[in-house]
Length: 336
Image 1 (cartoon, rainbow, N blue to C red):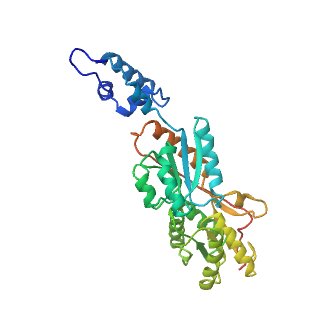
Image 2: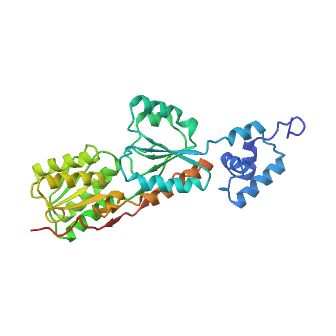
Image 3: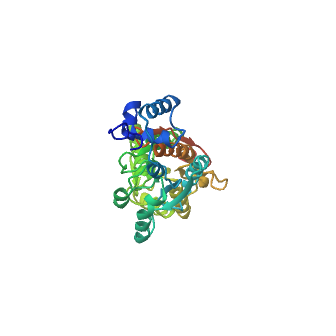
C-alpha cells in the first residue's frame, strides 16, 4: 500500500495534522500551496509529511482544491445606492485574488429566489450577506459567510464587518442638537441596520431629555417609504424642526414630502440621511448624511471571507467601524 510500512496502513492527512500539531484544514491549505499559511506552520507540515512518508491521494487533492473562484453578494434592493461602494470595494479585493463576483437581490420572486439558493453552493465558494437572511437561505447555505452590516439574524459561524450604527444614530442627534434643534423626528424601518440606528437615536434623545418622535418603525426603507413616513410623522408632530431618515433613499422621499407641504429644507426643516451614498454626495441634493464606511466594510468583508475560504477553522471575527457624520447643506439651525 502506498506510503505504508509493512502491514501498517498508510498515513492519513489526520496523522500528518497530529504530527505537525495543526488542524486537518491547515494541512489541506499547505497541500494546496495556499499563501495564507505561515512559514513556520508550512515547515512543520512538510516535516511531518516527510517523516511519515505521507502521499496524498491525487483524487482527494483534486477534490479538496476544486473551487469555483466565485463569491456571491446578496443584497435586498438594487435600487438602494448605498450598495454601490460596498460592492465596488468587494470587487476590488476579490479581483486581486482571481475571484469573480456575482450580485443577487433577495427581493426576487419566490420561485426565482428558491432556484438561486438551490444553486448557490454549486456556483460560489463563499457568501457576503448584505441583506436579511430568510429561513430558506439559512437552511440551504452552510459555506463560508461574512455579514456586511448589522442583520437581525446572524447565520451560525458567520464573520461580521459593519459600521457602528448605534453610534451613527447618536451622532445625528448630537449634530442636530448642536444646531439648536429639540424637536427631532426619526424615519426608521425594519431590518438590522435601521434597528441599530434607531437604538442610537433613542438613546441620544433620552439622554438629551427631549421627546421621542418615531415613524415607520416596522416598514420598508425605500424612497416611497420615506415619503409616506413624513406624512405619518407630521400627523402626530407637526412642529418637528429636524428629520433623521434611516438611509439616504428615505431622505430623498422625505425631501419630496416636505416640499409638498410647503416646507423648505433647511430653512424650515433640517434633514439628515444615512449611508453617505452617491445621492447624498450629489451637489444638487447636498444632503447631510452619516458615512457608514461602506467601502471600508466591503474591503474588510472580502478579506475576512477569503481568509475563511482558505481556512474554515479560523475563529469567528467581528469588526466594528466608527461612522462619520458629513454635514452638508440640508442641516441648519431651526428658524425658531
